[in-house]
Image (tube, rainbow, N blue to C red; front, side, top):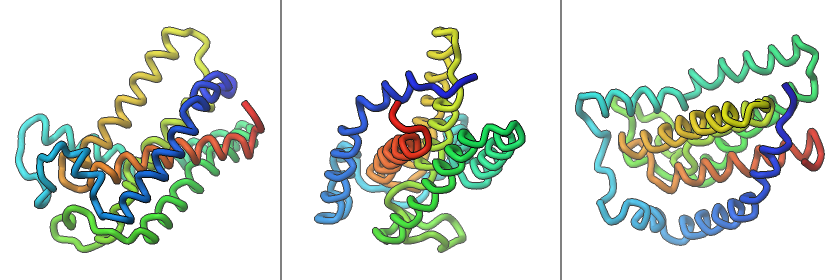
Length: 211
Protein backbone atom coordinates (compact mmCIF):
# COMPACT_ATOMS: atom_id res chain seq x y z
CA UNK A 1 0.00 0.00 0.00
CA UNK A 2 1.07 3.58 -0.55
CA UNK A 3 0.87 6.75 1.51
CA UNK A 4 -2.58 8.28 1.18
CA UNK A 5 -2.09 11.66 -0.42
CA UNK A 6 -5.82 11.87 -1.12
CA UNK A 7 -6.56 11.64 2.59
CA UNK A 8 -4.11 14.44 3.35
CA UNK A 9 -5.68 16.54 0.60
CA UNK A 10 -9.05 16.19 2.30
CA UNK A 11 -7.54 16.89 5.71
CA UNK A 12 -5.90 20.05 4.38
CA UNK A 13 -9.33 21.60 3.84
CA UNK A 14 -9.95 21.62 7.57
CA UNK A 15 -6.49 22.50 8.87
CA UNK A 16 -6.96 26.32 8.85
CA UNK A 17 -10.28 25.92 10.67
CA UNK A 18 -8.69 23.53 13.17
CA UNK A 19 -5.85 25.97 13.86
CA UNK A 20 -8.25 28.89 14.33
CA UNK A 21 -10.57 26.90 16.59
CA UNK A 22 -7.71 25.59 18.73
CA UNK A 23 -6.36 29.13 19.14
CA UNK A 24 -9.77 30.47 20.12
CA UNK A 25 -10.41 27.57 22.47
CA UNK A 26 -7.05 28.04 24.18
CA UNK A 27 -7.54 31.80 24.48
CA UNK A 28 -11.02 31.39 25.94
CA UNK A 29 -9.71 28.77 28.32
CA UNK A 30 -6.92 31.03 29.55
CA UNK A 31 -9.25 34.01 30.03
CA UNK A 32 -11.92 32.06 31.90
CA UNK A 33 -11.15 28.44 32.84
CA UNK A 34 -13.82 26.12 31.50
CA UNK A 35 -15.89 28.90 29.92
CA UNK A 36 -16.02 26.83 26.70
CA UNK A 37 -17.16 23.83 28.73
CA UNK A 38 -20.26 25.62 29.94
CA UNK A 39 -21.28 25.80 26.30
CA UNK A 40 -20.14 22.30 25.34
CA UNK A 41 -21.86 20.76 28.35
CA UNK A 42 -25.11 22.47 27.33
CA UNK A 43 -25.52 23.81 30.89
CA UNK A 44 -25.77 20.28 32.25
CA UNK A 45 -23.37 21.14 35.04
CA UNK A 46 -19.73 20.33 35.65
CA UNK A 47 -18.70 16.80 36.56
CA UNK A 48 -18.68 16.36 40.31
CA UNK A 49 -16.45 13.30 40.30
CA UNK A 50 -15.96 10.02 38.52
CA UNK A 51 -19.15 8.57 37.16
CA UNK A 52 -19.86 5.38 38.99
CA UNK A 53 -22.18 2.62 37.98
CA UNK A 54 -22.50 -0.53 35.99
CA UNK A 55 -24.29 -1.78 32.96
CA UNK A 56 -23.36 -2.01 29.32
CA UNK A 57 -22.92 1.71 28.68
CA UNK A 58 -20.61 2.24 31.64
CA UNK A 59 -18.57 -0.84 30.74
CA UNK A 60 -18.25 0.27 27.11
CA UNK A 61 -17.11 3.71 28.26
CA UNK A 62 -14.22 2.15 30.18
CA UNK A 63 -13.40 -0.10 27.22
CA UNK A 64 -13.18 2.86 24.86
CA UNK A 65 -11.23 5.00 27.32
CA UNK A 66 -8.72 2.13 27.53
CA UNK A 67 -8.29 2.25 23.75
CA UNK A 68 -6.91 5.77 24.08
CA UNK A 69 -4.65 5.08 27.04
CA UNK A 70 -0.84 4.96 26.85
CA UNK A 71 -0.69 1.24 27.83
CA UNK A 72 -2.74 0.48 24.71
CA UNK A 73 -1.50 3.08 22.22
CA UNK A 74 2.22 2.99 23.00
CA UNK A 75 2.80 -0.75 22.27
CA UNK A 76 0.79 -0.53 19.05
CA UNK A 77 2.73 2.55 17.99
CA UNK A 78 6.06 0.89 18.78
CA UNK A 79 5.05 -2.21 16.84
CA UNK A 80 3.96 -0.10 13.88
CA UNK A 81 7.26 1.78 13.71
CA UNK A 82 9.22 -1.44 14.19
CA UNK A 83 7.39 -3.17 11.33
CA UNK A 84 8.01 -0.23 9.00
CA UNK A 85 11.72 -0.21 9.88
CA UNK A 86 11.93 -3.98 9.35
CA UNK A 87 10.37 -3.51 5.92
CA UNK A 88 12.95 -0.77 5.25
CA UNK A 89 10.21 1.81 4.74
CA UNK A 90 12.26 4.38 6.56
CA UNK A 91 10.44 7.54 5.51
CA UNK A 92 7.11 6.04 6.58
CA UNK A 93 8.67 4.83 9.83
CA UNK A 94 10.07 8.30 10.50
CA UNK A 95 6.65 9.82 9.81
CA UNK A 96 4.94 7.39 12.21
CA UNK A 97 7.55 8.02 14.92
CA UNK A 98 7.36 11.78 14.49
CA UNK A 99 3.57 11.83 14.64
CA UNK A 100 3.17 9.42 17.53
CA UNK A 101 6.17 10.12 19.75
CA UNK A 102 6.56 13.79 18.88
CA UNK A 103 2.85 14.48 19.15
CA UNK A 104 2.56 12.74 22.51
CA UNK A 105 5.55 14.63 23.89
CA UNK A 106 4.22 18.00 22.75
CA UNK A 107 0.77 17.24 24.12
CA UNK A 108 2.14 16.46 27.56
CA UNK A 109 4.28 19.59 27.46
CA UNK A 110 1.08 21.53 26.73
CA UNK A 111 -0.60 19.79 29.65
CA UNK A 112 2.18 20.94 31.95
CA UNK A 113 2.04 24.46 30.54
CA UNK A 114 -1.72 24.86 31.07
CA UNK A 115 -1.49 23.00 34.41
CA UNK A 116 -5.24 22.78 34.95
CA UNK A 117 -7.06 20.26 37.08
CA UNK A 118 -9.18 17.45 35.75
CA UNK A 119 -12.80 17.29 36.86
CA UNK A 120 -11.63 14.79 39.45
CA UNK A 121 -8.67 12.71 40.44
CA UNK A 122 -8.77 9.09 39.45
CA UNK A 123 -9.99 6.96 42.35
CA UNK A 124 -7.17 6.28 44.78
CA UNK A 125 -4.63 8.38 42.90
CA UNK A 126 -3.52 12.00 42.68
CA UNK A 127 -1.28 11.35 39.66
CA UNK A 128 -1.70 13.63 36.64
CA UNK A 129 -4.05 15.81 38.70
CA UNK A 130 -3.07 19.04 36.94
CA UNK A 131 -2.87 17.74 33.38
CA UNK A 132 -6.35 18.30 32.06
CA UNK A 133 -5.95 20.41 28.90
CA UNK A 134 -5.64 18.87 26.32
CA UNK A 135 -6.85 15.30 26.82
CA UNK A 136 -4.01 12.83 26.35
CA UNK A 137 -6.45 10.07 25.43
CA UNK A 138 -7.97 12.23 22.69
CA UNK A 139 -4.52 13.14 21.37
CA UNK A 140 -3.11 9.62 21.40
CA UNK A 141 -6.14 7.93 19.85
CA UNK A 142 -6.39 10.42 16.98
CA UNK A 143 -2.63 10.46 16.37
CA UNK A 144 -2.68 6.69 15.96
CA UNK A 145 -5.81 6.79 13.80
CA UNK A 146 -4.44 9.47 11.49
CA UNK A 147 -1.10 7.69 11.19
CA UNK A 148 -2.88 4.55 10.01
CA UNK A 149 -5.15 6.47 7.63
CA UNK A 150 -2.22 8.38 6.14
CA UNK A 151 0.19 5.46 5.77
CA UNK A 152 -2.22 3.03 4.17
CA UNK A 153 -4.50 3.91 1.29
CA UNK A 154 -7.08 1.28 0.43
CA UNK A 155 -7.77 1.13 -3.28
CA UNK A 156 -11.38 0.01 -2.92
CA UNK A 157 -13.42 3.20 -2.22
CA UNK A 158 -16.00 1.28 -0.21
CA UNK A 159 -13.34 -0.32 1.97
CA UNK A 160 -11.62 3.04 2.37
CA UNK A 161 -14.85 4.68 3.55
CA UNK A 162 -15.58 1.77 5.88
CA UNK A 163 -12.14 1.90 7.49
CA UNK A 164 -12.38 5.69 7.84
CA UNK A 165 -15.80 5.44 9.48
CA UNK A 166 -14.72 2.72 11.91
CA UNK A 167 -11.46 4.40 12.90
CA UNK A 168 -13.01 7.82 13.44
CA UNK A 169 -15.98 6.32 15.31
CA UNK A 170 -13.56 4.69 17.75
CA UNK A 171 -11.69 7.97 18.20
CA UNK A 172 -14.97 9.80 18.86
CA UNK A 173 -16.01 7.10 21.34
CA UNK A 174 -12.70 7.44 23.18
CA UNK A 175 -13.20 11.19 23.55
CA UNK A 176 -16.85 10.85 24.52
CA UNK A 177 -15.96 8.24 27.14
CA UNK A 178 -13.60 10.68 28.86
CA UNK A 179 -16.41 13.20 29.28
CA UNK A 180 -19.00 10.54 30.18
CA UNK A 181 -16.77 9.10 32.90
CA UNK A 182 -16.05 12.56 34.29
CA UNK A 183 -12.31 12.25 33.70
CA UNK A 184 -12.05 15.22 31.31
CA UNK A 185 -13.81 18.41 30.34
CA UNK A 186 -15.26 18.61 26.80
CA UNK A 187 -12.77 21.33 25.89
CA UNK A 188 -9.90 19.00 26.83
CA UNK A 189 -11.11 16.42 24.32
CA UNK A 190 -11.83 18.92 21.55
CA UNK A 191 -8.42 20.56 22.01
CA UNK A 192 -6.77 17.13 21.89
CA UNK A 193 -8.41 16.30 18.57
CA UNK A 194 -7.53 19.65 17.04
CA UNK A 195 -3.92 19.40 18.17
CA UNK A 196 -3.57 15.86 16.81
CA UNK A 197 -4.87 16.90 13.39
CA UNK A 198 -2.56 19.92 13.20
CA UNK A 199 0.50 17.98 14.34
CA UNK A 200 -0.14 15.13 11.88
CA UNK A 201 -0.34 17.62 9.01
CA UNK A 202 2.85 19.34 10.12
CA UNK A 203 4.70 16.01 10.38
CA UNK A 204 3.49 14.93 6.95
CA UNK A 205 4.74 18.14 5.38
CA UNK A 206 8.09 17.78 7.13
CA UNK A 207 8.62 14.16 6.02
CA UNK A 208 6.90 13.97 2.64
CA UNK A 209 6.59 17.57 1.54
CA UNK A 210 3.35 18.93 0.12
CA UNK A 211 0.52 16.51 -0.52
